[in-house]
Amino acid sequence: LKLAFKTGKHDTVGEDLVNHCINDILVHGARPLFFLDYIATGRKDLKVLLPLVGGVAEGCKQAACTLLGGETAEMPDFYPEGEYDIAGFGVGVVEKSRVIKGEGIKPGDVIIGLESSGLHSNGYSLVRKIVKARRWKLSQKFDDLGRSLGEELLEPTRIYAQPVVAVFGASKPGIEGLANITGGGFIENIPRILPKSCEAVIDASSWSPQPIFSILQGGGNVDRAEMYRVFNMG
Image 1 (tube, rainbow, N blue to C red):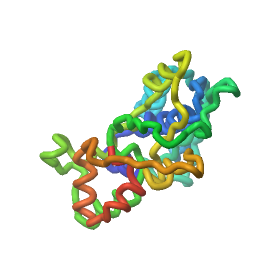
Image 2: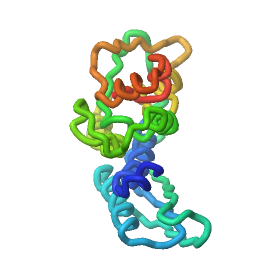
Image 3: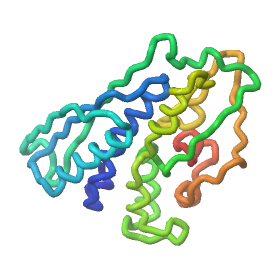
Image 4: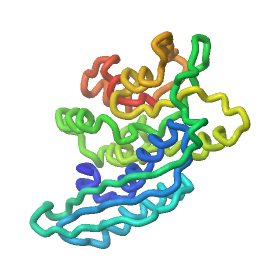
């Protein structure tokens, strides 16, 4: 949100809100049903609210779920001029017998990673700390990115509903566990779904993270282990 306020770009944060919730629903084997949002601001400004809600609607469209309703609260003097807060929640459904818990994971199972669209709005306290320390401008262009830093940092979270739900629909899905790599990165999210008899072995050379990760790692002199603890690494 701090970056959205600085750049004046408000559509992607609405999309992020939906996509984070929906991706958390998917890991249980559930299909998204509906979403509700809450927006609070000091003064209603349609130039901000319309793209903001439009982003929420776009996220729901991608997830094939209904934007069932929401609340917009106008509270003068509570929020600084030009700022707002946004929250929301989603509901999904899955047959009890098909809930994915990770209990069936066993040695020899294959881990498949789905490519992210970038940072996925995780680790932004560290991101902002690096940007501030390096005195980078959000309008600054990076050759490796092919666009401005602000545009890259506001890239919306990828929503995995379509490819994952398609697998749910198979007669034998073959999925024993799912992890959404958000806060806590690889280090904290993957072990949550593993039985005590298993550990995850990941070949980090099997994919290339997007350039933003190396830019941040170099810019902040961030340890490799910390990168994998904070970010999804692509």
